[in-house]
Image 1 (cartoon, helix red, strand yellow):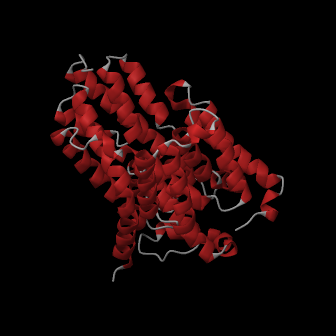
Image 2: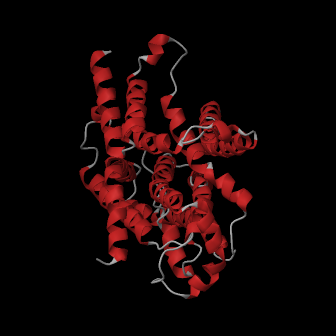
Image 3: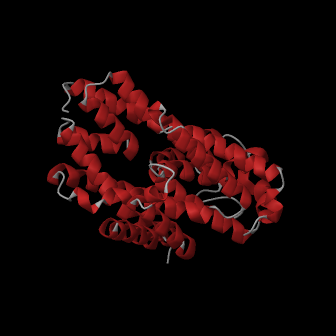
Length: 262
Length: 111
């Protein structure tokens, strides 16, 4: 079978378990839009144009209480600042793609698409070995001109796996928003389907705590995020993530990696 | 809780938030396309983004109300703890979410 199709399918398949956490989130986005007084088209428009759940919910909440328009936009944007870190983290894998393809890939970048795809790339890199990747750096420039049919070697990526992940999430997000708009709050709150969202993040977090510096990064980030949870604009999340990354690098410098478990 | 803003204001917010969010998403993906390689120091830094961001995302959802044993019997914490164990052994999202949900509702029923 065509390897592109295999990659695409593989991305779709790896995303299916995440939908359990996405569907209720998308439903809530649809319900919240109608409750805030937006028309169905405006609510769906927000899901298509913004395509970022937490910021959509925050913006809808603020619109519903007639907050200043600047505050609504700023809050949504600050909540999405974390995506800059995803962009930086995933960028090396996309650097060989044409600009137009990269522009399309950027639109699909979300928490889940990032986490699933980077986990896959990490596995692939570990299997390939670090030395080989450095050796392939010389060939990267030529591969840019070679077009999308070049074999995946060194650090070069084809976008099909990512598009399978991001495309699935996009479709489910839009359909979920429409269902949320139409049926409103049909699912009883007592089911606590909203709890699926942090559980999905836990499921993604535990496997990446693979060595001591990573554990340090996670623990410090968690502590800072908790203590700064009261800050406006979700600044606690950003502060926690930044300090956590610094802690991880610091732990690595101190040599904790040498004694770290696999 | 319904907005009094008109369609122009609402579409303006949607477009402004959407464009800014897209610019954030594109930022480094665009920039790195013009750079031959990623500086090794930055690459090491980025390795710690996933554990740090994910931990910062979930941690505030699992904070006990107080530092007592009673507070630890909170269904949310029980569900989260069960999910962590499931994630550790299965490394599978569906099993983790299923176990966490089961833990939450069992704790709500029993506690």
